[in-house]
Image 1 (cartoon, helix red, strand yellow):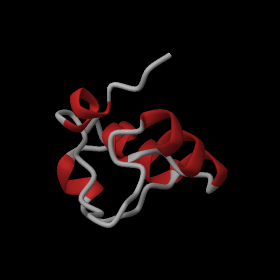
Image 2 (cartoon, helix red, strand yellow):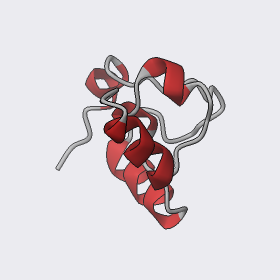
Image 3 (spheres, rainbow, N blue to C red):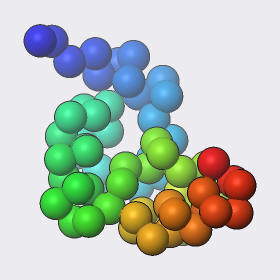
Image 4 (cartoon, helix red, strand yellow):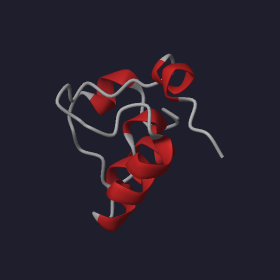
Length: 67
């Protein structure tokens, strides 16, 4: 399967500029899951900018109705 990096970048809200995984969703998901985190794209922009990508933060936002 060929990666659609350019198309993926159109929807990537990650603000961590030096990230080598931007647009490479399969690598991004694998990296964050190993860290017990979720990728930026599942968080609202304001929450993503905190760089708290923890599952707990995601659940908190969900319970607040922000997702």
